[in-house]
Length: 341
Image (tube, rainbow, N blue to C red; front, side):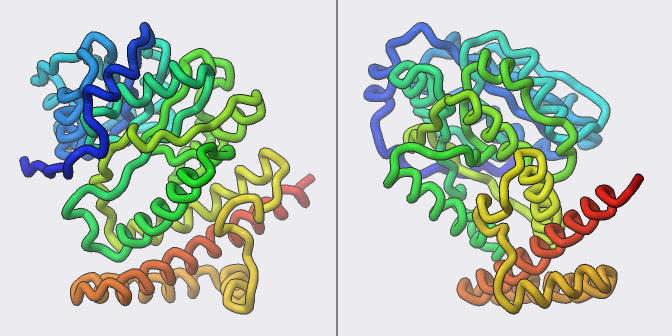
């Protein structure tokens, strides 16, 4: 199994560990589906933390994987307390809730199965909770070295970088959560009822959780020292499906919380291009899907020649095309539901 080598840390582990002189302990929850190799790298990175291994536990939910994940987990003997659950495939949100229900410690650190932990990850999350009290802590997760070769990854990193820069400048977030690396008090998670399992497809569940946490008056803080590195990998076709699903999800979140789409970055449809796309997705969704597949072929071609501006432009076009499609189709579905007796 190949390993990704991380760059040097921005702060010393000793400094974070000294700041984290607290009785708080963490439960790290990780849902996974058919990503054994990535998950094993994530779990290995968690063996190297600035705080002692008795300060945290790791809980993995295997969501119906068929790639030997459960068998690989059975062979692990990490230094930290480690448990895993196996359930039929019910989606990442149900798997995340299952892991959260098994947590025993004060703070839930929620990680994706493709996140390489820095040495300070656990200590920085715990220190932030110790300093700030009952908060939601957003960690940072730039792309891991060697994972910036696709247009989809470049587009994702550009959006993430802008969001994190804005958070760093302001010091405090609103209710938007980047779900690959954040932490929350376990009692807060219980109070809001965990994730909404009706968000089975990609997108929406973390924003919905953030809105429910914010409604309790709980502050969101950004802690750049709580860092992981993202082993981001998605095909052009998978990227397009994610964008369509995100578009549908943002409409559902907006509807659930009675918010305008303009409250969600990149979700308000405006300008002539968006209007043309909406018209097409309303009138001829099958044709639009075929056009979109051609755009993904263009993205695949851009990835082959590896000219970054071209890759980024192609990825942004695919994402917008399908995101507007998802928004439009979900709005149409909602209007039909409203007209039903």
